[in-house]
Length: 428
Image (cartoon, rainbow, N blue to C red):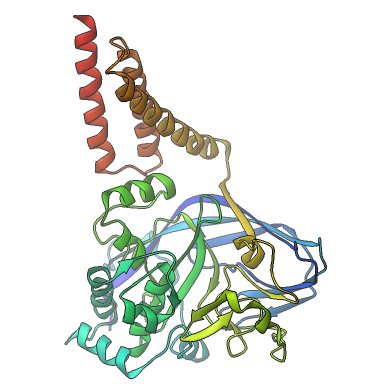
Protein backbone atom coordinates (compact mmCIF):
# COMPACT_ATOMS: atom_id res chain seq x y z
CA UNK A 1 0.00 0.00 0.00
CA UNK A 2 1.41 3.39 -1.02
CA UNK A 3 1.74 5.97 1.75
CA UNK A 4 -0.69 8.88 1.83
CA UNK A 5 2.00 11.35 2.91
CA UNK A 6 5.71 11.95 2.68
CA UNK A 7 8.14 14.26 4.43
CA UNK A 8 10.19 16.91 2.67
CA UNK A 9 13.40 18.27 4.17
CA UNK A 10 14.83 21.68 3.33
CA UNK A 11 18.17 23.02 4.54
CA UNK A 12 17.74 26.11 6.74
CA UNK A 13 21.13 27.09 8.17
CA UNK A 14 24.17 25.95 10.11
CA UNK A 15 24.33 26.39 13.87
CA UNK A 16 27.09 26.24 16.44
CA UNK A 17 26.36 24.80 19.89
CA UNK A 18 28.66 25.37 22.87
CA UNK A 19 27.89 23.29 25.97
CA UNK A 20 29.66 23.56 29.33
CA UNK A 21 29.19 22.06 32.76
CA UNK A 22 31.17 23.54 35.63
CA UNK A 23 31.24 21.81 39.00
CA UNK A 24 30.58 24.62 41.47
CA UNK A 25 30.01 22.20 44.35
CA UNK A 26 32.45 21.50 47.16
CA UNK A 27 32.33 17.78 46.39
CA UNK A 28 32.66 15.54 43.30
CA UNK A 29 29.86 15.41 40.71
CA UNK A 30 29.16 12.67 38.17
CA UNK A 31 27.77 13.75 34.81
CA UNK A 32 25.98 11.74 32.10
CA UNK A 33 25.93 13.81 28.90
CA UNK A 34 23.88 12.89 25.81
CA UNK A 35 25.88 13.61 22.68
CA UNK A 36 23.90 14.68 19.59
CA UNK A 37 23.33 12.17 16.81
CA UNK A 38 22.81 12.71 13.10
CA UNK A 39 19.17 12.59 12.03
CA UNK A 40 17.06 13.74 9.09
CA UNK A 41 16.67 17.22 10.65
CA UNK A 42 20.10 17.56 12.29
CA UNK A 43 22.84 16.53 9.87
CA UNK A 44 26.60 16.68 9.37
CA UNK A 45 27.56 17.12 13.02
CA UNK A 46 31.15 18.39 13.23
CA UNK A 47 32.75 18.27 16.67
CA UNK A 48 34.91 21.29 17.44
CA UNK A 49 35.82 20.58 21.06
CA UNK A 50 35.14 17.73 23.49
CA UNK A 51 36.40 16.98 26.97
CA UNK A 52 37.46 13.32 26.93
CA UNK A 53 34.90 11.24 28.87
CA UNK A 54 35.71 8.50 31.36
CA UNK A 55 33.24 6.22 29.55
CA UNK A 56 31.32 6.35 26.27
CA UNK A 57 28.27 4.13 25.73
CA UNK A 58 25.56 3.79 23.08
CA UNK A 59 21.95 4.39 24.14
CA UNK A 60 18.97 2.53 22.62
CA UNK A 61 18.01 5.83 20.98
CA UNK A 62 21.22 5.91 18.94
CA UNK A 63 22.82 8.71 20.95
CA UNK A 64 26.18 8.26 22.60
CA UNK A 65 26.20 8.80 26.35
CA UNK A 66 29.41 10.32 27.74
CA UNK A 67 30.19 9.83 31.43
CA UNK A 68 32.37 12.18 33.47
CA UNK A 69 33.51 12.40 37.09
CA UNK A 70 34.31 15.99 38.05
CA UNK A 71 36.17 17.24 41.08
CA UNK A 72 35.28 20.66 42.51
CA UNK A 73 36.24 23.37 40.01
CA UNK A 74 36.52 20.99 37.03
CA UNK A 75 34.43 21.41 33.89
CA UNK A 76 33.21 19.67 30.74
CA UNK A 77 33.17 21.46 27.38
CA UNK A 78 31.53 20.24 24.20
CA UNK A 79 31.18 22.30 21.00
CA UNK A 80 29.91 21.31 17.57
CA UNK A 81 28.41 22.52 14.30
CA UNK A 82 25.42 21.01 12.52
CA UNK A 83 23.20 21.66 9.50
CA UNK A 84 19.52 22.16 10.38
CA UNK A 85 16.65 21.12 8.11
CA UNK A 86 13.02 22.20 8.02
CA UNK A 87 10.44 19.39 7.99
CA UNK A 88 7.22 19.47 5.97
CA UNK A 89 4.51 16.79 5.87
CA UNK A 90 2.94 16.84 2.41
CA UNK A 91 0.53 14.57 0.48
CA UNK A 92 2.28 11.76 -1.33
CA UNK A 93 2.63 12.37 -5.07
CA UNK A 94 4.95 9.93 -6.92
CA UNK A 95 5.14 12.27 -9.92
CA UNK A 96 6.11 15.41 -8.00
CA UNK A 97 9.55 16.51 -6.83
CA UNK A 98 11.22 13.25 -7.85
CA UNK A 99 14.61 14.80 -7.25
CA UNK A 100 13.69 15.81 -3.69
CA UNK A 101 13.06 12.34 -2.39
CA UNK A 102 14.74 11.63 0.93
CA UNK A 103 15.57 8.23 2.29
CA UNK A 104 12.72 7.06 4.51
CA UNK A 105 13.94 5.86 7.93
CA UNK A 106 13.03 2.37 9.08
CA UNK A 107 12.64 0.94 12.56
CA UNK A 108 14.15 -2.28 13.81
CA UNK A 109 11.92 -4.43 16.00
CA UNK A 110 13.96 -3.44 19.07
CA UNK A 111 13.53 0.25 18.24
CA UNK A 112 9.80 -0.22 17.70
CA UNK A 113 9.40 -1.88 21.09
CA UNK A 114 11.50 0.82 22.75
CA UNK A 115 9.21 3.57 21.43
CA UNK A 116 6.09 1.61 22.42
CA UNK A 117 7.15 0.90 26.01
CA UNK A 118 5.51 2.17 29.19
CA UNK A 119 7.65 4.38 31.44
CA UNK A 120 7.06 6.49 34.58
CA UNK A 121 6.71 9.68 32.51
CA UNK A 122 4.85 7.99 29.62
CA UNK A 123 2.70 5.33 31.32
CA UNK A 124 0.33 3.20 29.25
CA UNK A 125 -2.56 3.05 31.72
CA UNK A 126 -6.05 1.74 30.99
CA UNK A 127 -7.43 5.26 31.41
CA UNK A 128 -5.03 6.75 28.85
CA UNK A 129 -5.64 3.88 26.42
CA UNK A 130 -9.42 4.20 26.66
CA UNK A 131 -9.25 7.95 26.19
CA UNK A 132 -6.99 7.64 23.16
CA UNK A 133 -9.42 5.17 21.55
CA UNK A 134 -12.32 7.53 22.25
CA UNK A 135 -10.49 10.54 20.77
CA UNK A 136 -9.57 8.90 17.46
CA UNK A 137 -13.00 7.34 16.98
CA UNK A 138 -13.22 5.29 13.78
CA UNK A 139 -9.93 6.64 12.30
CA UNK A 140 -7.55 3.82 11.41
CA UNK A 141 -4.72 5.55 9.52
CA UNK A 142 -1.88 6.46 11.98
CA UNK A 143 -1.37 10.04 10.79
CA UNK A 144 -5.09 10.80 11.02
CA UNK A 145 -5.22 9.22 14.47
CA UNK A 146 -2.26 11.33 15.59
CA UNK A 147 -3.86 14.45 14.10
CA UNK A 148 -6.98 13.90 16.22
CA UNK A 149 -4.83 13.46 19.32
CA UNK A 150 -3.02 16.71 18.49
CA UNK A 151 -6.29 18.64 18.08
CA UNK A 152 -7.59 17.19 21.35
CA UNK A 153 -4.56 18.49 23.22
CA UNK A 154 -4.63 22.00 21.76
CA UNK A 155 -8.39 22.29 22.36
CA UNK A 156 -8.61 20.98 25.92
CA UNK A 157 -5.23 21.59 27.57
CA UNK A 158 -3.48 24.78 28.70
CA UNK A 159 0.18 25.74 28.81
CA UNK A 160 1.63 26.62 32.21
CA UNK A 161 5.24 26.86 33.40
CA UNK A 162 6.54 25.51 35.66
CA UNK A 163 4.16 22.61 36.33
CA UNK A 164 3.88 21.27 39.87
CA UNK A 165 3.91 17.68 38.61
CA UNK A 166 5.52 16.04 35.60
CA UNK A 167 4.35 13.14 33.48
CA UNK A 168 1.47 12.10 31.24
CA UNK A 169 -0.77 11.05 34.13
CA UNK A 170 -0.34 14.40 35.89
CA UNK A 171 -0.96 16.27 32.62
CA UNK A 172 -4.18 14.34 32.01
CA UNK A 173 -5.32 14.93 35.59
CA UNK A 174 -4.50 18.66 35.73
CA UNK A 175 -5.15 19.45 32.03
CA UNK A 176 -2.26 21.89 32.05
CA UNK A 177 1.50 21.69 31.78
CA UNK A 178 4.55 22.84 29.87
CA UNK A 179 6.17 21.52 26.69
CA UNK A 180 7.34 18.35 28.43
CA UNK A 181 3.90 17.47 29.74
CA UNK A 182 2.24 18.03 26.35
CA UNK A 183 4.88 15.75 24.84
CA UNK A 184 4.54 13.02 27.46
CA UNK A 185 0.75 12.80 27.12
CA UNK A 186 0.85 12.85 23.31
CA UNK A 187 3.43 10.04 23.38
CA UNK A 188 1.30 8.02 25.82
CA UNK A 189 -1.77 8.44 23.60
CA UNK A 190 0.14 7.34 20.50
CA UNK A 191 1.78 4.34 22.15
CA UNK A 192 -1.62 3.25 23.48
CA UNK A 193 -2.70 2.99 19.84
CA UNK A 194 0.51 1.08 18.91
CA UNK A 195 2.01 4.10 17.13
CA UNK A 196 5.74 4.38 17.99
CA UNK A 197 6.31 7.81 19.47
CA UNK A 198 9.12 9.62 21.27
CA UNK A 199 9.72 12.88 23.08
CA UNK A 200 12.52 15.00 21.67
CA UNK A 201 14.51 17.02 24.21
CA UNK A 202 16.37 19.99 22.82
CA UNK A 203 16.43 23.74 22.62
CA UNK A 204 15.43 26.63 20.42
CA UNK A 205 18.46 27.64 18.34
CA UNK A 206 18.58 31.13 19.83
CA UNK A 207 20.90 32.25 22.60
CA UNK A 208 21.28 30.52 25.97
CA UNK A 209 19.21 27.90 27.76
CA UNK A 210 16.10 27.99 25.54
CA UNK A 211 15.09 24.46 26.56
CA UNK A 212 12.19 22.84 24.74
CA UNK A 213 10.55 19.46 24.12
CA UNK A 214 8.30 18.13 21.38
CA UNK A 215 7.30 14.82 19.73
CA UNK A 216 7.97 12.60 16.75
CA UNK A 217 5.76 9.63 15.87
CA UNK A 218 6.71 6.95 13.37
CA UNK A 219 4.72 5.83 10.33
CA UNK A 220 5.87 3.10 7.96
CA UNK A 221 6.81 4.47 4.55
CA UNK A 222 6.83 8.05 5.87
CA UNK A 223 9.31 8.17 8.75
CA UNK A 224 9.35 10.28 11.91
CA UNK A 225 6.58 12.90 11.82
CA UNK A 226 7.12 15.92 14.11
CA UNK A 227 4.44 17.35 16.41
CA UNK A 228 4.68 20.34 18.77
CA UNK A 229 1.37 20.76 20.59
CA UNK A 230 2.69 23.12 23.28
CA UNK A 231 3.83 25.76 20.77
CA UNK A 232 0.53 25.51 18.91
CA UNK A 233 -1.35 26.05 22.19
CA UNK A 234 0.89 28.94 23.22
CA UNK A 235 0.35 30.74 19.94
CA UNK A 236 -3.38 31.03 20.53
CA UNK A 237 -2.33 34.29 22.20
CA UNK A 238 -1.27 37.00 19.72
CA UNK A 239 1.33 38.27 22.20
CA UNK A 240 2.81 34.78 22.51
CA UNK A 241 2.72 34.43 18.75
CA UNK A 242 4.66 37.68 18.36
CA UNK A 243 7.19 36.49 20.97
CA UNK A 244 7.65 33.05 19.38
CA UNK A 245 7.94 34.34 15.83
CA UNK A 246 10.15 37.32 16.73
CA UNK A 247 12.30 35.59 19.33
CA UNK A 248 12.60 32.03 18.04
CA UNK A 249 11.74 32.22 14.35
CA UNK A 250 8.66 30.04 14.86
CA UNK A 251 6.07 29.70 12.10
CA UNK A 252 2.56 31.06 12.59
CA UNK A 253 0.51 29.13 10.01
CA UNK A 254 -2.62 27.50 11.41
CA UNK A 255 -1.90 23.98 12.71
CA UNK A 256 1.62 24.27 11.30
CA UNK A 257 3.10 22.29 14.20
CA UNK A 258 1.45 19.05 13.21
CA UNK A 259 3.82 17.45 10.74
CA UNK A 260 6.10 20.46 10.32
CA UNK A 261 9.07 22.03 12.10
CA UNK A 262 10.79 25.25 11.16
CA UNK A 263 14.34 23.91 11.49
CA UNK A 264 15.36 26.44 14.14
CA UNK A 265 15.96 24.13 17.06
CA UNK A 266 18.53 21.61 18.21
CA UNK A 267 18.11 18.02 19.42
CA UNK A 268 19.93 16.86 22.54
CA UNK A 269 18.36 13.47 23.24
CA UNK A 270 15.40 11.23 22.46
CA UNK A 271 12.75 10.05 24.91
CA UNK A 272 12.48 10.16 28.70
CA UNK A 273 13.61 7.45 31.10
CA UNK A 274 16.70 6.38 29.17
CA UNK A 275 19.08 3.99 30.97
CA UNK A 276 22.28 5.36 32.49
CA UNK A 277 25.66 3.77 31.74
CA UNK A 278 27.46 3.24 34.04
CA UNK A 279 24.47 2.71 36.33
CA UNK A 280 23.53 5.36 38.87
CA UNK A 281 24.52 4.05 42.36
CA UNK A 282 21.06 3.22 43.72
CA UNK A 283 22.43 2.42 47.18
CA UNK A 284 22.98 6.12 47.88
CA UNK A 285 21.06 7.61 50.80
CA UNK A 286 21.80 11.18 49.79
CA UNK A 287 18.26 11.83 48.61
CA UNK A 288 17.34 12.36 52.25
CA UNK A 289 19.55 15.46 52.34
CA UNK A 290 17.51 17.15 49.64
CA UNK A 291 13.90 16.72 50.73
CA UNK A 292 13.11 20.35 49.97
CA UNK A 293 14.01 19.69 46.33
CA UNK A 294 11.68 16.72 45.88
CA UNK A 295 9.60 16.83 42.70
CA UNK A 296 6.61 14.79 41.58
CA UNK A 297 8.00 13.15 38.44
CA UNK A 298 6.07 10.27 36.91
CA UNK A 299 3.80 9.94 39.99
CA UNK A 300 6.85 9.51 42.27
CA UNK A 301 8.50 11.93 44.67
CA UNK A 302 11.92 12.29 43.17
CA UNK A 303 15.14 14.07 44.20
CA UNK A 304 16.81 15.23 40.99
CA UNK A 305 20.54 14.52 41.03
CA UNK A 306 20.36 12.26 44.10
CA UNK A 307 18.69 9.21 42.63
CA UNK A 308 17.76 7.52 39.36
CA UNK A 309 14.23 6.59 38.30
CA UNK A 310 14.34 2.80 38.10
CA UNK A 311 17.86 2.96 36.72
CA UNK A 312 17.09 5.74 34.25
CA UNK A 313 17.42 9.51 33.98
CA UNK A 314 13.96 11.15 33.81
CA UNK A 315 15.33 12.95 30.75
CA UNK A 316 18.61 14.23 29.33
CA UNK A 317 18.52 17.91 28.41
CA UNK A 318 21.28 17.27 27.66
CA UNK A 319 22.69 15.90 30.92
CA UNK A 320 21.91 14.20 34.21
CA UNK A 321 23.99 14.68 37.33
CA UNK A 322 24.77 12.81 40.52
CA UNK A 323 25.62 14.99 43.51
CA UNK A 324 27.52 13.67 46.50
CA UNK A 325 26.48 16.45 48.88
CA UNK A 326 23.54 18.87 49.14
CA UNK A 327 23.37 21.36 46.28
CA UNK A 328 23.90 24.94 47.23
CA UNK A 329 23.83 27.68 47.84
CA UNK A 330 21.15 28.95 45.44
CA UNK A 331 21.08 26.01 42.94
CA UNK A 332 20.48 27.05 39.33
CA UNK A 333 19.64 25.33 36.05
CA UNK A 334 23.35 25.22 35.28
CA UNK A 335 23.95 23.14 38.44
CA UNK A 336 21.55 20.46 37.22
CA UNK A 337 21.79 20.55 33.41
CA UNK A 338 24.82 22.65 32.54
CA UNK A 339 24.72 25.60 30.17
CA UNK A 340 24.50 25.88 26.39
CA UNK A 341 24.64 28.65 23.85
CA UNK A 342 23.42 28.38 20.24
CA UNK A 343 24.28 30.81 17.49
CA UNK A 344 23.99 31.00 13.73
CA UNK A 345 27.20 30.65 11.74
CA UNK A 346 28.11 32.86 8.82
CA UNK A 347 28.62 36.60 9.03
CA UNK A 348 25.44 37.55 7.17
CA UNK A 349 23.20 35.26 9.22
CA UNK A 350 24.68 36.41 12.52
CA UNK A 351 24.47 40.09 11.59
CA UNK A 352 20.90 39.78 10.32
CA UNK A 353 19.77 38.28 13.63
CA UNK A 354 21.45 41.05 15.65
CA UNK A 355 20.08 43.69 13.28
CA UNK A 356 16.56 42.29 13.66
CA UNK A 357 16.66 42.43 17.46
CA UNK A 358 18.34 45.86 17.54
CA UNK A 359 15.81 47.37 15.10
CA UNK A 360 12.85 45.97 17.05
CA UNK A 361 14.13 47.18 20.43
CA UNK A 362 14.97 50.64 19.06
CA UNK A 363 11.56 50.90 17.41
CA UNK A 364 9.61 49.95 20.54
CA UNK A 365 11.68 52.21 22.81
CA UNK A 366 11.30 55.22 20.52
CA UNK A 367 7.61 54.61 19.96
CA UNK A 368 6.94 54.25 23.67
CA UNK A 369 8.99 57.34 24.49
CA UNK A 370 7.14 59.34 21.86
CA UNK A 371 3.73 58.53 23.28
CA UNK A 372 4.80 59.11 26.89
CA UNK A 373 6.28 62.52 26.12
CA UNK A 374 3.95 63.68 23.35
CA UNK A 375 1.50 65.26 25.80
CA UNK A 376 4.27 67.59 26.98
CA UNK A 377 6.38 68.24 23.88
CA UNK A 378 4.83 69.36 20.62
CA UNK A 379 7.70 68.62 18.23
CA UNK A 380 8.71 65.01 18.73
CA UNK A 381 7.42 63.75 15.40
CA UNK A 382 10.99 62.99 14.33
CA UNK A 383 11.04 60.40 17.13
CA UNK A 384 7.83 58.83 15.84
CA UNK A 385 9.25 58.77 12.31
CA UNK A 386 12.54 57.24 13.50
CA UNK A 387 10.56 54.56 15.37
CA UNK A 388 8.65 53.72 12.18
CA UNK A 389 11.85 53.54 10.14
CA UNK A 390 13.42 51.19 12.69
CA UNK A 391 10.34 48.98 12.60
CA UNK A 392 10.45 48.99 8.80
CA UNK A 393 14.02 47.72 8.98
CA UNK A 394 12.95 45.05 11.50
CA UNK A 395 10.12 43.94 9.22
CA UNK A 396 12.34 43.78 6.13
CA UNK A 397 14.94 41.66 7.91
CA UNK A 398 12.19 39.39 9.27
CA UNK A 399 10.83 38.88 5.76
CA UNK A 400 14.28 37.97 4.43
CA UNK A 401 14.75 35.52 7.34
CA UNK A 402 11.23 34.08 6.73
CA UNK A 403 10.18 35.09 10.23
CA UNK A 404 7.40 37.60 9.48
CA UNK A 405 3.67 37.15 9.95
CA UNK A 406 0.49 39.19 9.63
CA UNK A 407 0.52 40.84 13.10
CA UNK A 408 3.86 42.42 12.20
CA UNK A 409 2.30 43.91 9.07
CA UNK A 410 -0.70 45.21 11.02
CA UNK A 411 1.59 46.85 13.59
CA UNK A 412 3.65 48.40 10.80
CA UNK A 413 0.49 49.83 9.25
CA UNK A 414 -0.53 51.40 12.56
CA UNK A 415 2.92 52.87 13.08
CA UNK A 416 3.00 54.23 9.53
CA UNK A 417 -0.40 55.90 9.95
CA UNK A 418 0.75 57.41 13.24
CA UNK A 419 3.95 58.73 11.66
CA UNK A 420 2.10 60.23 8.68
CA UNK A 421 -0.46 61.88 10.96
CA UNK A 422 2.31 63.29 13.14
CA UNK A 423 4.20 64.64 10.15
CA UNK A 424 1.09 66.33 8.80
CA UNK A 425 0.53 68.04 12.15
CA UNK A 426 4.19 69.00 12.33
CA UNK A 427 4.12 70.55 8.83
CA UNK A 428 1.06 72.60 9.76
